[in-house]
Image (cartoon, rainbow, N blue to C red; front, side):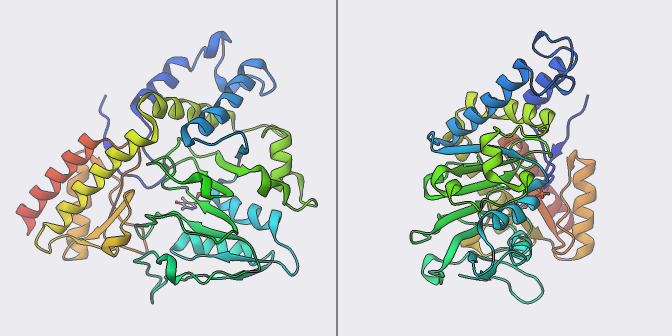
Length: 363
Ligand SMILES: *Cc1c(COP(=O)(O)O)cnc(C)c1O
C-alpha cells in the first residue's frame, strides 16, 4: 500500500486511523452484521451514533446546550439559500462581507430572498482577492437581519484572523474550509456552517450549528427540507440523513478529541503554515505568495513560480515524489497546498524539502 501526501482542496485527506477503523467496521458495524450504510436510520444503533456525533461536535467546539447541531445535505452551497430562506423576505436585508469566490456565491443566492448590503467587498479587478478587511473598515447596516462572512477563503488563500464584531447583529459564518483547524470564538456567532469534506470528513453532510435565540427568529413558512426549525425538531432525521457521511464525521470528531482537540490542532496547523510560508518567503523570489501577508490562510497556501510552465513542472514533479493535488484553482493558476487537519506536520516537512530541492534544480 502506498498513501500519498494529499493537498486536495476538497474533498480532502481524511486521517488514516479513521479510514482504517471504517474499513475494519465495514462488514459488521457494532455487531449488527451489516455496514452502517445498511441499517435503518430509525434503529437504535444508528440513532445513538447520530446523536453522539452532535454531542461530540458541541463538546469539541465548547458549545453549550443553547447550540443546536444540524446535519443538512446539499453542501455548503445549499446553506447559501437555506439561510436567507429562513431569515429574509420582502423588505428584509442582510449584510454580506465579500472576501472571496464563496462569499460571492452566497450573495448570489441571498439576493433571491431579500436585499443584500456589503459592509466590505475586497474584490480587486479580475476576480482577485488578496486581503481581509479590518474591523474599522466594516460599514455595518443597522437594518440587517444578520451579518454573513466566510472565515477562510479556500480559493484565494486568505483567512480571518479575528472574529468580526457584528455590533449586536447575528453573526453567521461559512467555516467550510477552516472549521476545527484551531480554537475559534464560536460564542460570538449566531450560526456557523461547514460542508464536511474539507476538515471534518467526507462530502454529503453539512454541519450547521445554530443558537436557540437565532433559530427562534427563523421564518415559519419555509418548505420542510429548507427549515432550520424542522431540522431541530426532528434532530436532522425528518428524512433519511446521509448516514455514512455522518458516521465518518463521528470517527473524525473522535480522532480530533483523542488528539487534544482544537488547542492541539491549532498548534500543529500554526507550525505547518509557518514552515510553508517561510519556504515561500525565503526562496529569493522563486516562490511568490498570492495573498497579502497579514491575511494569509493557514489552510490554503497559494503561491506561484516564475512562469506557468514552472507551475506545471512543479505539479508534475511533486506528483512523482508522492505529493499530489497541488495545482492552483483554475481561475488562480499557480500552486495551492490545502493543509487541512489530516495533512500532518511531517507531510509538510517533506513537502518543504521537496520545494527547496525543486528550487535548486530549477531556480
Ligand atoms: C468548498 C466550499 C464551499 C462549497 O461547498 P459545497 O459543499 O461543495 O457546496 C462553500 N464555502 C466554502 C468556504 C468552501 O470552501
